[in-house]
Every structure is written in C-alpha cells, then in structure tokens.
Image (cartoon, rainbow, N blue to C red; front, side, top):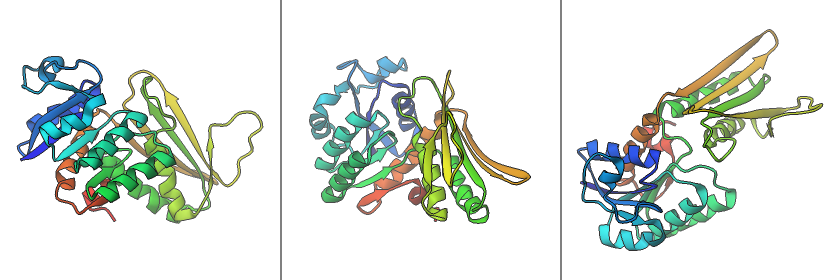
Length: 264
C-alpha cells in the first residue's frame, strides 16, 4: 500500500487528488497538509465524511512527514511554497509528484539539486494529463515537417490562475524549439510588432476554463491547428495518481510524464 501525503489539501485540486487516492486500491491517504482548516478532519472539510486524517499545518510539514511517514507527496500548490515543500520532502526521503507551475529557472534548479542529492524520485510536470503529453508528441512531429511555418501558441485558463503563460504553453514552445532550434518567444504583441523568426505565446484568462492549448502552424495558403482541451481537472488528477504509483518504484532522479507513460 502506497502511503500518500497531499499539500494544498483544502483546495480544489488537492481535494480532487484526495478523492482519487481514496478510490485507489493501491493507496492510502496518510497526511493532508494546508495553511487553512488546521486540525479539522480533511473528510469533514471536503464534506465526504470523517477520514480520521486531520489537516496539518504546511508550516510544520517536516513534522507531518515524521509522524505520517508517507511514501510520496503530491503537490499542486503555488511556486514559492511548493519549493519549500519539495525541499522538505527531499530531506525526509519522501518521493514527489509535483504539478505546481510558475517556477523560475533558479527554483527549478534548487529543487532538482535537492532531489538528486537526497536520492528520492520525483515526477515534475506542468501538466499531468495523459492527453496533453500525447499532444507534445504531435507538436514535435509537426515541427519536423513544418519548420518554415509561422508558429503561434494560444492558451486559455480560468480567471484565478496566477502564472502566465501556462507551464503547458511553455513546455509546448520548448518541445518545438527542441526540434527547430532556438526561436525567440514573444508574449503577446502590441503596436508595430512585425513578425520575425519567433513563437508567439498568448494567454487568455476568464471564467472557469479548465485549460485549453492550441498550437497554430500557419503557412502560405494553409494552416494546421493542434489542440488539447481539458474538460475537467480529473484529467490532471488521474495522471498524478498514475505518476505517484510509478515514482514509488522508480530509480532516484527527476522525471516527467513522458517517463511515466513510456513516451520517447
């Protein structure tokens, strides 16, 4: 039985992750961590009935790890506290599944160094949807054959999303440049902005949009659009659960969803 800790447990994504853990025959929820509802039963907070798992203070996360001894921490929070959570998990030899986005290069480097030093395993991905990871593969194939086309990326998310552009949009751009070589990333345009050898990246924020990503390859007389739409956060939760099972038997190191899914 895989023992699971969840940070951001009282949030929408944290709650959905917990629901999926409870449904899994391979997992047991041993720790729910947040900055609110401290001491309350997480099941009562979620209105699904008592689970005998109290919400523990994120500020004392290492103490939580010592008492609950999880095999894996699943973190879908925000960048700054997520870094602290990852470092604490690494120190306590807890494997990691991290779906938080908005990390700076420095933050990413700090986390990866701590993970490798500790000898734990981690899956860090901007998007745990199985479909979106197939989407990346389609982009790489299209880029090989459409290298002289103009490329634009348009992403849309709900009005509460803090980071922009999305981690998925940036990963899409990086996937394309891995094939074509470096191109300038241009984030929106205004004024007299003539197109150069670039990838335009555009963010839309509104309503309750879960996550839409469209990559446009535009040539003379035609265009191709490759699109992924998440209809529900369940797409991310399902992938995170799959990653959590995988990471507990993986060798030490930092991986992404391509490794989990066996996509080359």
